[in-house]
Amino acid sequence: MDKKIILTTKAPSPIGPYSQAVLVGNTLYCSGQIALDSSGNLHTENIEAETTQVMTNINEVLQAANMSFSNIVKTTIFLTDMNDFAKVNEIYSKSFGSDYPARETVQVSALPKGVHVEISVIATQ
Image (cartoon, rainbow, N blue to C red; front, top):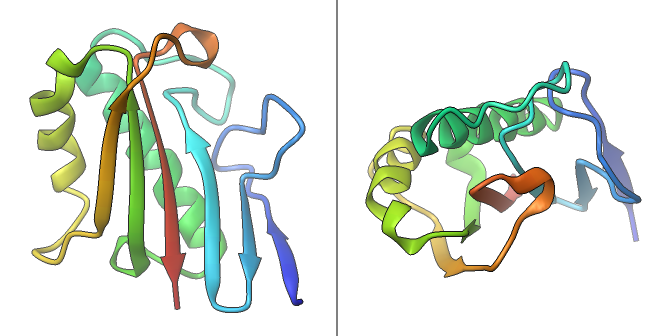
């Protein structure tokens, strides 16, 4: 198995024992991103700011693997409040063209650092 760890300083450093992403063959498995920027600052003013930072982080990890949002085939969105679903969708959809990846969205009781949204992705070349 050809496994490569993807790490960029343009996205937040992992806050635990995991990698930002792992490339196996042509498939990139990206860890969940929260509204933490590369300087360690949280952007939790509102759900729109959080989601924007999350999508920025995902973009940086994808670029580090020479990929883009068009390479994403699957996403998982974790929300602490399903009432934020429409606002998250509005920001999320701006990162994609008309071909959206497969996805599930689930409500959870809590997320790291008290954030309200976390998104993980799988992308292929």
